[in-house]
Length: 385
Image (cartoon, rainbow, N blue to C red):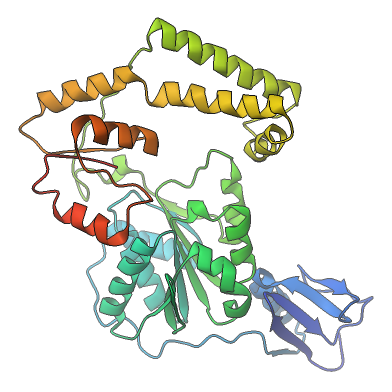
């Protein structure tokens, strides 16, 4: 045990632990850095390091933590639904780290407000779009009755309660990483991307809450969420809440066949893409499969043709003309009702918009235009997203 207390400092998204000899066993997550003659760790290891030193009764001067406690909690409290209470209790029991998986419309943002109220730590909410940033800004301001900061979209105002985008979090976290004790990752299935994951590692926040309806990813990288946020601590599917808390619904699957010509082209393009993948030993089901395919496909003309084949076989599968014909049938069948059409990709959304002359909403739709479309849905019979 060192004679003098150790010193922990936050430096550009990392932690410097000083006062421990280079040949001493460091706390978990720390490694000796000869350049600065101290032990160093990513900021995400903060809670792990502090708990280890407290457990071993090692004196510590904590200069890393720079976040404030919230003087007041929520001023507006809604009666929580039973599953929201259960989710909060599960998250608290997991030391305030983990994912809550709930379907759209189940009140994930309200749960986040409950978590902020429970921990009373300076909080950063990270959302994928500026539209969601605006929604979070309004919700936090109404719930806590205080000034809420915004980072992104041309704004940089840091407050004990702040909302930002994933892009801005990546850009600024090395400077902001010590200023928040709780980070809420909305739509956290976006987080495992290399850049966004770095933002999570540069933050020392001991409390982390991930919110999503669909944690699974096509590249299999959802496993990284356990490292960045914590394990799934609570999960309810839409079927668990339908009828009691969400509207009843029916799911009817309709299979649409490709024409003989489309099927032949689809199979030919898919065979070309699969042959390339197999020649290069790429396992698309593995977490790195998609990344490896992208890198390999960019190195040769054969690879670029394989990528083109991959895209074409998906286009034929997801945007087949027969699907549009069946959509026309459905819209005619339900012509006296309003309808909202969800698509796999933007190509299908725009195809529907052109064919049926209905408004379309994609990631490219500006915030003001999006608001106008949503406000006018009562006048439109159909819409595609």
